[in-house]
Length: 395
Image (cartoon, rainbow, N blue to C red; front, top):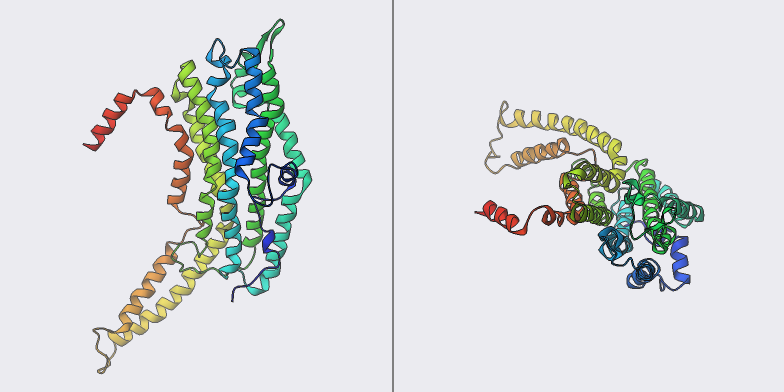
């Protein structure tokens, strides 16, 4: 019989929290549902639409240069039309998968009966952190400060005229659109990003609490992870965050490559660092189980080595060096199949991984994170040449 937790309904990593309740009060979220369409439209009305209106007023919707034109800024579209909607969508895609994975520890009998109370405490602790007001206030403060440290600011974009920075008698100052961008639009965007990072931190803390239990792992499990392979599948859905951030970075790179003739090779190191960072964010929390899985593998090898030694000696004595039973023919004997099954089980333990995810899942996250950058190929290679290259590879 599957154990039932008294607080399992509180194990939510995508819903709840002060910001969620605020959106319910102002009508952006109806009931307990995600209300994706309402939130996306509301977000665009607060962020991008004022930017467009201010740019039209100042004549910077389509300015004299691409950098001074809001409607030509690829990164702005990526930030407000792709990144934040994808963060909202993560509540439908990634959030339920994390909750299901968390409950699977109990439903799959990985948690022993004497540890169920500890799991209850871990769930309550995670819910309390999710509902805390102070972390979200801190995140809002960081977002207000961090709005001045966007990618363009790091690369010196704020030093030249753009749709956000207009020429002034004393130099270059913020335009009306720039004021809204830095004081309202980007802080809201960064807040929702930090909010999800906080939720992932809460999830990692929950996993840490579970990793300290005497989990009922099976060294011979076919997932080669003691039975914890389901965690890797759940964490692949976190690649939606990598995809969202990649949209922004790729759009920024596309603008510089297309309008400012910056060599695409300039961003090679940034791309590699970005991929490594996304892999750590998506799969890094699962490394918490590495010590436990390593101990399970060592214990399994020791136990099955003793079992194999005992069985092999008995098999050899019965069928090789001893007197073969006259009433038990070798052909069709179950002893041989049992010997093979024991060898397969020992082989599974030897192949057991120290982490609950596969190389395929690492590759899946890398591919998803790289997809928004594929259109950059068309900026540096003519379509005709690309088609000839593909045709040559297929012939």
